[in-house]
Image 1: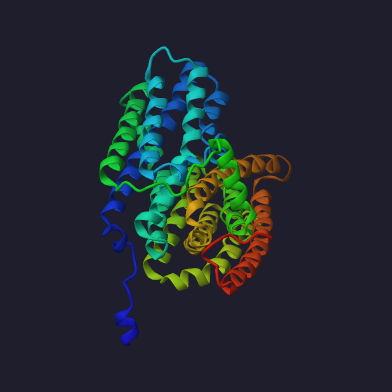
Image 2: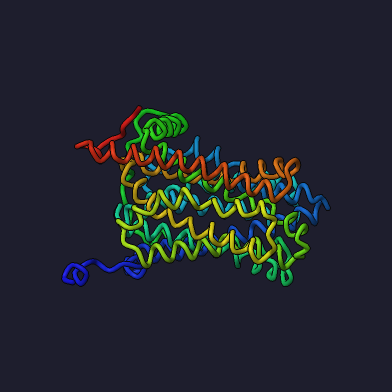
Length: 419
C-alpha cells in the first residue's frame, strides 16, 4: 500500500505542467491547422485551375513524397544548429512557401513546386521538434506522454480538420483560405521563438557539408542494430495499417454504405488510435507500457483478417477500431528509441524516423491499390493483416533480442552498437 501511495502520478496532466511543453503544444496546434487548411485549399485550387482530378490528387500526394528527400539530405540541420532557431526558421520557410500560392497569378507548376518545398521542410521541423521534446521533458516518461499528445492531436486533425476546412471553403476562396495558413505558421514561429529556451546545438558541424553530415548521420543511425529494428517497428505496421484507408472508397461502394459509410470507415481507425493512446498514457505506468509494446505490435493488424468474411459496415468499423487501439504500442517504442539513440544523433534519428514513416505510408497506399486490382478490396485488407502481423512478429522477436543485448552491456547508454 505504501508503494502505491508513494508512486509518481501517471497521466497527461504532468506534461501540461511544463510551461515550455505548453508552448510547443500550442505551436503544434497552429501548424496543424495551417497544414490541414493548406492541403484542402490547394487541392481545390488546383482542381479549379485545371479541372483535372489527377492533378488535384497529385497536389495532395506531394505532401508525402518529398519527405524522404528532406528527411535524408537535410536531417543534419536538426543537430548542427540550435533547435529553437531551426524550428522558427522552418515555420517561416513554410509560411514563405504558402504566401506565393495566394497570389492570383500563381500557375499550376508554381503551386506544385511550392507544395514540394513545403513537404521537404516538414520532416526537418518534425524531427527537430521531437528531439526538442526530449530536451524539454527529459528522455523518460514525460517525453513519451508528450509525444503521445502530439500524435493524438494529429489524429484528431484527421477527424475534424478536413471537415472544418471544407466548411471554411464555403465562406472564402481557396487563395484567401491559404492566407490563414500563412498566419498560423507565423504565429507558431512567434510562440516558439519567445516561448522556448535557447539551447546549443547537439553536435558540432565539423568540416562536413550539410548533405554529407546528414547522410553520415543516417548511416550511423541505421548501422546500429537496436535502433534499426526500432525504426522498422515504427515504419512497417503503419505501411499495412493504411490499407483500409486507401481502399475505403471502393469498399464503401461495395457495401452500398454511401458517403456516410465512407466517412465512418475513414474515422474508425483514428478514433481507435486516440482511444488506445489515451488509455495507455493515462492508465498505465512506464514499465507496463514497455511490457505490452511487443505483444501489441504483433496483434494490432490481426483484426484486418476479419475482412476475409466480407463483413458489413458495423463489423468493419469494429475491426478498424480494434486495430487502432493496438497502436498504443508506440508509447513503449518511444521510450526505447529515445533511450537507444545518443544525444548527438537524436535530431537526425528522429528526422529520419518521421521521413520514413510518411514515405512508407505512401508506399503502402500505392501497393494497396495495385493489390486490390487483382485480389479485390476485402482480400487485400485481409492479406495486409496476415503479412503485416508476420512481419511485426519477426521484428518484435528481433527487438526483444537486441533489448536483452543492450541491457547486458555496461555502456549501453553511451554509444551505438553495430552489427
